[in-house]
Length: 294
Image (tube, rainbow, N blue to C red):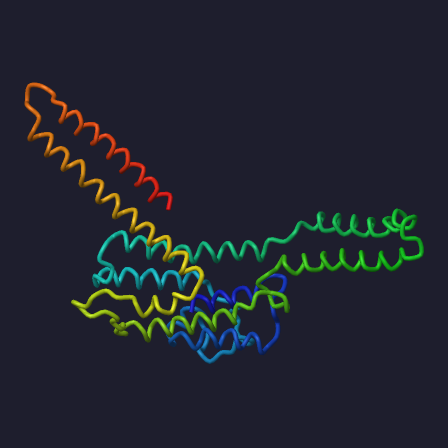
């Protein structure tokens, strides 16, 4: 409902506000189909629910009313423990306030016009340049100058016209954003979310089953990307196996040196064990860096 109220606001305000009876009635019918009698009277006071948009004394309603209703619903949901934690409540409230911020930002874009003196200056400079440029172009293009100037003038004046259209993107021109078409997609998504809210998802692997992706991998084995990925994974597994074997050596060396080494002095066997330990630690570091690079 908030989206359709926003559409009516932009379609019926600003310099490109529509005055077509069919469009006005359609905009009001969209809102009427999503509201009850009490809500409709709150949005458009002192009017009957069946009043068409073209005969209404209200050009549009205030979108802030819808934001307030959403805020009341959030508070009711929090009181019913639908929002269990304060951070979740803050996120939902921030999203609701963000709707209002986006609306006013769109309104600023739609209603802020290019300053009129600057518009006059741009048009004057554009015309002056188009009338003086042929004198510069003629020594080079000779008799083809009118043809080239026709193309150049069409391009410059066309860009100026496009700029005028883009200045009001939410109006009723053919090149403006079709907000009503976007509303149709929004309603479809909301309907899908509502229908699927209690859907039971399928379980691919039952409890206690072995995790096996052989069927999925079989369909990927012929792709080049998967072959390269699979080769890299095999190299990584091989490096990890070598690292695991080497890291077992220092612990064995430490146990052996602890048995043969006296507490008071160092023996040749203990020195050899220490040298072996340093070498294996260096190998482990090198293999780990290779696995990280891979």
